[in-house]
Amino acid sequence: MNTTATSTTRLRYTGVAIGFHWLLALMIIISFSVGWYMSELSMSPTRLKLFNWHKWAGITILALSILRLVWRLTHRPPPDVPGPRWQQRMAHLTHWALYALFFLVPLAGWAYSSAAGFPVVWFGVLPLPDFVSPDKALAEVMKERHEFLAWTLGVLVLLHVGAAVKHHFFDRDGLINRMRPGR
Image (tube, rainbow, N blue to C red; front, side, top):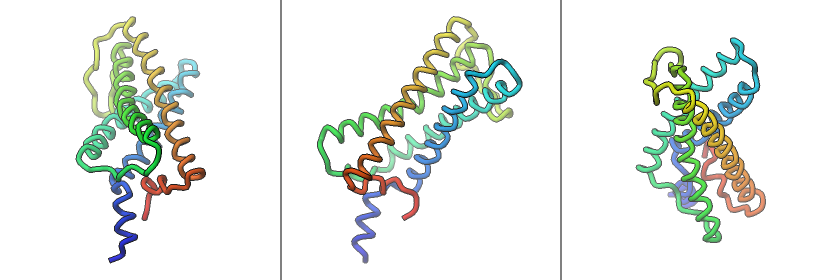
């Protein structure tokens, strides 16, 4: 038995966890970018199409986040990479804040859409129930909350990427290999 392969395997996330990580990362980056772009457009068929795509992506992100959280709670992650205790605490805090935002951002968007009187029809096929009743004042509040939470998620993603880059190029501790696809 190759002990190097065995110890490396225990230091990596599962293939399912890695798949969730990269799929959600890609979807969040694209959804954030589309949301930012479409918010600057004047009312047009293109803007309406992008809003629907953005809502579909948000609901998909929410569903995948539920599955990812269930996987995470039922499958132990690899042990922490040795380092200062404050860095480990920050990493755990950042990860759990990211998980919270994976839920809060789409839920706030769904509430905004419902309060504004625009139903969410997932991929144009599955109508979802209104998350809240139509209410113009609530729609304005939820729009601001959705934007704030999305920007907060964006900042935390950049912090997460920055930490991974630091570990890879400066600490050279192999941390990034835990989440790299492949073997």
